[in-house]
Length: 112
Image: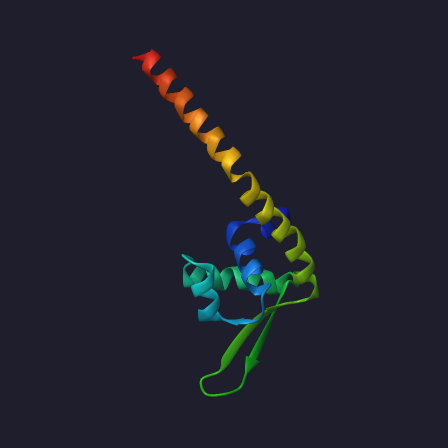
């Protein structure tokens, strides 16, 4: 279950839907570089697990809107907390990556 709710696309979709319901294409634009297939799969998984509701309006053509359920809004709390933590700690992670890359470069030069 943790893998299912903690993947990149799930977290981004939950984050976007946290500000209100969206139709598929609007959601796709806001999430970013997600394929139509991946978004559809992510939404199906979220709906199956009770985080997202899917409402079809019977007009021509049919309109489908996705929204967070009560459970989805509860998931939004840790998703937002994690996003804030990442933003706050990005400089530290960037510094760690730079230090690691520097160590790797030094190690590779020693091998030559």
